[in-house]
Amino acid sequence: MTDLGATIQRDAEGRLRHLITLEGLTREEITAILDLAQFYVRPPGELPARDQSLAGHTVANLFFEPSTRTRVSFEIAAQRLGAEVVNLDMQTSSRVKGETVLDTIYTLQAMHADILVMRDAEPGLPAYVAQHVAPHVCILNAGEAHLSHPTQGLLDALTIRQMKGDLTKVSVLIAGDIAHSRVARSAWQVLSTLGVKEIRIAAPDDYLMPKPREFPGAIRETDIDRAIQGVDVVMALRIQRERMSSAQIPDESAYHDQFGITMERLRKARPDAIVMHPGPMNRDVEIASNVADGSQSVIQRQVANGVAVRMAVLATISRNVQARRQFQ
Ligand code: NCD
Image 1 (cartoon, rainbow, N blue to C red):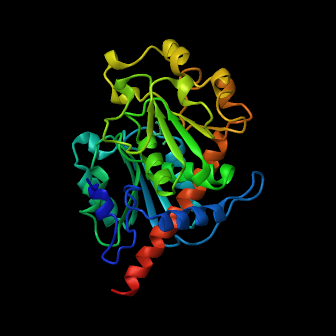
Image 2: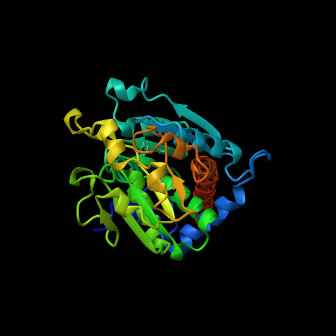
């Protein structure tokens, strides 16, 4: 089944107009975004990359779910490309007074905000909004329910590419609450398209495992000690409590014993394996604190890459808007 977002996000010429999902992006399109992101990466301590790709544009951040990394990195990325940026405080926005999301969007559109970055718990909302905005307005999905988090998938792919090179030789384990994770879904989409050698998904029980038809081609495991054997990449995921009823939330310490990524378990992966986590981390639940801070951790690199990837996505989308304008 093709995701509606995969169709909606392209203009009549097939160019990316919005970024709603990684589904349907070709290897070439993904590689072009990662290459541009790599161009924007600077070593720690150096001044960050800047240009004027977004001069004249107004980016609005609309986060209806909590966010630190994603929201701040979109803000920094847009500013470094010369855009004007507004952050809406959704706790005090008119939506809590009953205004529909579309009315909020139309209000921003009337103020000439033309790139809208959205996070929401409702599946399908970014595609729905994308169908209603004016032709020059772009929607970037910054996290949609348990379904999609495209820029996170791209930054994860960039991080693995930097650390491991040829993805066709890399074995990746995604471990934790896969069922409720948009990070896992977007990672699987991008890594499959880039031809990664193997993806293993591991969750401690059926409840945290996705439906059988999801993640085709991935190896499924419920035993973390078996799943981690010989992998090159370990991606740990948080338990998404906000998507569960209180009765379903596992006991944290029992979860850590049964399934947490500990030093002892990490030794079963390849000696040069890297450890990733999208954040926010629950230390000593899904990941031991000493693993998160250890020499194999690339968690801070993921954060740095997040800014570069969002710059690349913003620059790509705005270039496509300009190309469309020239033919209008
Ligand atoms: C993730 C998210 O919001 O989906 N965080 C992020 O964007 N860096 C993962 C999570 O909340 O666990």
